[in-house]
Image (cartoon, rainbow, N blue to C red; front, side, top):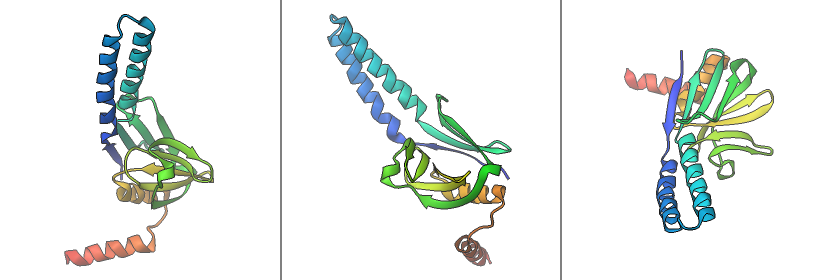
Length: 165
C-alpha cells in the first residue's frame, strides 16, 4: 500500500491582488527609489509565500512520510514510520493555525486549509498533519505503523460491508 495526496487551498489567491496593488503603488511612487524598492520587496515576498504555500503534499517514501509545501519546495518534513508510536484521526484547533506552527503543549502542526488532521505521536511529541483526506491518511499510517484500526473504524468498515451485501 502506498499514499500520495496533494491538497490545494485558495489562501494563496489573496496575495495576488495585493501584489498588483503594490506594483501600482511602486509605479506611482517611481520617483522615490526607497519607496519603490520597499514596495517591490514586499510584493516579491508575497509572491514567494503564495508559491510556497499553494499546496501540501503528503507522500509515502518507503521508510518515511514526506510532508511538502509547494509548488516552490522550500518547506518539507520527513517522519520515519519507525519513530511513530501512535496515529489517530482528529481536528486541529484555531490556535494551531495554518502553515507550519509549534504551540507549547500542542506540538507541531503542518496544515494548509481546514481542520481535519492525522495526529501522530513521534518520539513522544505530537505532530498534526492537516489534510482534506485525513481518514485515508490515518488508515494508511495505521497499516504502515502496524496499529490496528480503532473500534469505531472497525465498526464503520463492518457497516460499509453490510451495505454492499
